[in-house]
Image (cartoon, rainbow, N blue to C red; front, side, top):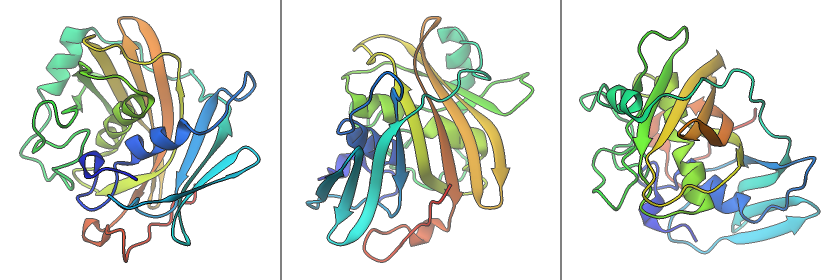
Length: 241
């Protein structure tokens, strides 16, 4: 079950949190230390879901509808990950987050400005000035620590680097490697950057730093959508990478 607290769109789960929750069920190894998750339909909230294991693949179903599946994967490449910013630099970038912009999901658990302190993560990725590509940064001080929250923190900074305020989109696939869980109370820097785009598909990378130490990183595919259609009971988002 995905509690309503962890919504992205108002009627479905936040893609990063859901992917991290699924990743916790996937067995990894030295050759495949990351987890790749594909979201096939909007994750419903507050409903019992069925989990199936087949070899190394874990599938989550809502009755007979495939919601998501995860499997061990090679770690995303570290080439191209931006160098860490200082906490002050990331905080300055976050202050450039446009709260007046058209946020498609203002109650999102990760980046929703309508979430209260201590309820949502309130990660507000703002543009980093002077970069050769579109990059966002924010500061996150965890009040709790889990694999789900690490994945969630790696989620939304990528879509803001892709311009979600201009083109509403939802997470389609995400491959992440969490090297260490975030520690409660640490001031962490999270970065997102645009990689490429092709039609409705938009590709990004994200990274989570503790000081100069990379503690988690991910690559994701986002799918442009009509935000009014994202409802778990009657909508389906094709997320084929």
